[in-house]
Image (cartoon, rainbow, N blue to C red; front, side, top):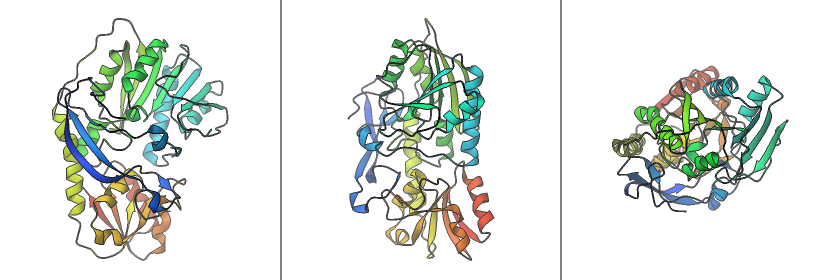
Length: 368
């Protein structure tokens, strides 16, 4: 699939800004041979009208999401995110029928059902396999065409930014007369300022900040009843269907340079690492670790022992696009001293504290 117009403002004025050649198709763990890995060219384009950066060439979602995205996000910050979001939804919902788009891990569903077991909870996902979560109905379907019930509350946690046509999804909600929608998205503007990780990648196919999402929903008769900034990590929104909602335009072409500079900054930072010869681990696995590995020199790639991660579903598997396996965080206990490469992002402090509890002789190389 190829985008021919801006995902935010529908302008056709898209210009090329950056390319990652031969980049791994996904950052999920795998058990297949490295010879089966698919590499793609990630081409970033910027809208000359609103400034949103987005992928132009889009992968077939049936391939990209063929493996269930069932990470439990088992870190203190993610746990707090799910607790806060479930409270935000529970305290503002006006229906006991909830459909969560995505949510294959069932973390949010379990949190809400613990609050009220009477909730009729459904997970709608494009994945074929039923996650078999107790007291949760599973439906395989596309949120852009699914026939929602108007009495159902729609919930989406860190999924909106994965959509290929978000306006089509919101238009579908409007046509089905869905009255309440709760969404959590990454705080992309905060991430850009930190310069820790690129925003647009294989799965996050477009940049979307606070004003963008307000604008997109307002075009389809939804007003924001309440929003919440969760620790500069995520943005929570409660949208309600209203009549005569005025759309607020969002134009900021500087975002093109901001998104491009994040990639260029990380590329230059990683490629500058040349001053050690000892073996090391990269933390965490997933996109963060994959980008570190991608930009490492051939010499440093040969010194990589593997990746460290908290997600139990990743352990013992290979990180796609690399020859390296993923280990538990306590792997560092096996060494008198060990070096760890780590992105200096919002999870750094909690990761470092955890690793230090296993081994106090870790040498950290921060990518900041």
